Image 1 (cartoon, rainbow, N blue to C red):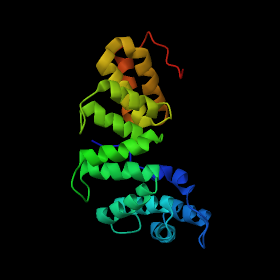
Image 2: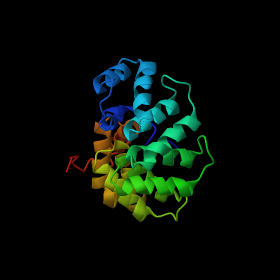
Image 3: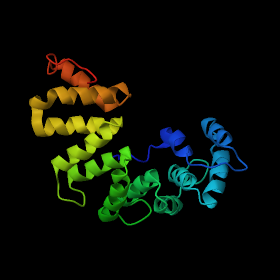
Image 4: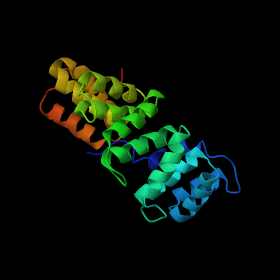
Length: 220
C-alpha cells in the first residue's frame, strides 16, 4: 500500500522555501533539478544540509530515498530525514514516519511512525494528516477507528491533497453508503480534477452504473 509521502518531488517548490541563500542560488538549484541534472542539484543541496538547513536536509534525504543523483541509500536518507525532523521540518517528519511504517532501512515500528505522523499532522501538514488517517482506518499501531480516520482524511482533503480526497470518499462509502453519496462524489471529483487516476476510475464506474445520475457534481 503506497503512502502519501515519498512521491514528494512534485512538492520541491514548497520545500525550497526554507533553503537560505549561499554560494549557490535557489534558482540554480531548482534549475538543475528541473533540467534533470540530479547530481548537480544534489551537490547544491548537500552544502545547505551540512550547514544545518532543515529544508535542504529533507531534500537530501529525498534524493537518497529515490536514488536521484546518488546511489539509493535508505540509511543515509533516514540520517538526513532525522536531522531535519528534529528541527521541526514537517515534510521530513512525515517522510521519517513512512520509513518507520514500511521498515525501510530500519526496523518497522508503527509506534514511531505514529509519533512522527502526529507531530507533523498536528502542525497541519496535509500528507501526514492523510497518513495518520490511513493508520486509523486500518488499525496500524492504534485501535481501528473510522471516526478518527475520517477526521484526519478530511483535514487533509480540504487542503487539496488528492490522496486524502480519494481515501475520504472511499471511507464515506464504507461507513454510509448511498446516504453519503453527494459527499463521495464531491471528493472523488476533487481528486479526479487533480489527475488522481483511481478517483477518475471510481467516477466512471459510478456513472456507468447509474449510481450518481441523481447527484449534481459540484465543488461545494
